[in-house]
Length: 325
Image 1 (spheres, one colour):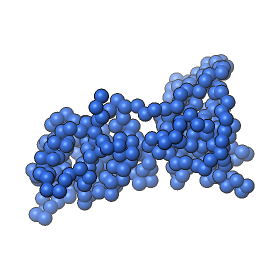
Image 2: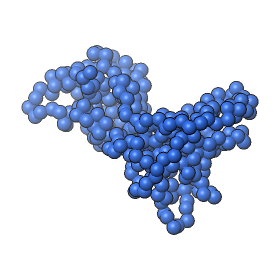
Image 3: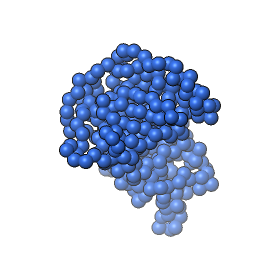
Image 4: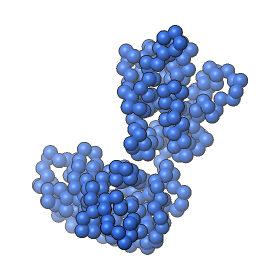
C-alpha cells in the first residue's frame, strides 16, 4: 500500500513557529510524507496550482489555527479568510471539496471558529474535532496528534512482544471490588479488574544507562531491558528525583483495596506490562508519566522508598505508588 501524506496549512503571521515545530515532530514519525509550503514549493512555481495538486494528493490536512487565524485582516482591512485568493481558504477548501480528512490543530490558546465566522465553503471546518497543542504539554499533545493521524491512516507502530505469562492472581479480588465500588464507578472497576487479572511477568535482566527522553519512534531494539539507575544517587530523594526507566511495581488503592502490577519502562521509549504495552513520555516540569493507551501518573512525593501520586485513566482518578522492583 502506498504511503499516505500529510499537508500542513497555516498562516505565517499567526502560527509559523508552531507549524514548524509540529512539522518536525510529524516528519520524525512520517519521514518524507509531510508537506509544508516552505519546504515543498519550488521558487517560480504557480503557487495556486501547486497547492491544488499537493493538497489533492495528500490523505490528511492539518489546519493550524492560532488566535488571529480568523480575524486577521489585509491592508484594506478585510478579513483574509473572506478573500477568494486567500491561500489558507484555498488549501482547506480544496481538502473539504475532495473529502480529504481535515484536522483542526489549535495553538496559542485559540478557540475553534464557529460556522458564522467562516465563509460558506469552509463552514464544514467548524464541525471537525480539533486537537489542542499547548506550550506546557507540547510533547504529549503532539503524541495525541500523531496517534490521531495513525488511526486515520490505519497505521500501527511496532511495539514490544507481550511478557510471557507465568501464573495468575487470585480472581476473588474481582468480586470484592465490584461489591466495594458499586455501579457508579464503572470506569474505575474496569481499570482495576484488568489490573487484578494481569499475571506476574517473567524476570528481566537489568542494565544501567542514562535516562533517554521519549521519542516518536524507537531507535533501538524495543526488547532491551530497562534501566534501574536512580537520579540524585547518594542524595535525599524527592519527587523531582523520579526517572521513568526501570522495573516498577505500581500499587493503586481504591476503597481501601490495593492492587499491584509490574511495569517495565524501557530506555527506548516503550513500556510493557501484562495489561498493556506501548510508548511512554515524561513531562518533567509537570512530573507526569504517560503510558500511552493506558494511564497518566503524576508524581507528587517520595515517601518510605516509594514515589506517590495520582493515577488517571479516562475519568477515573485514584492514589498510586511506584517502587522499583
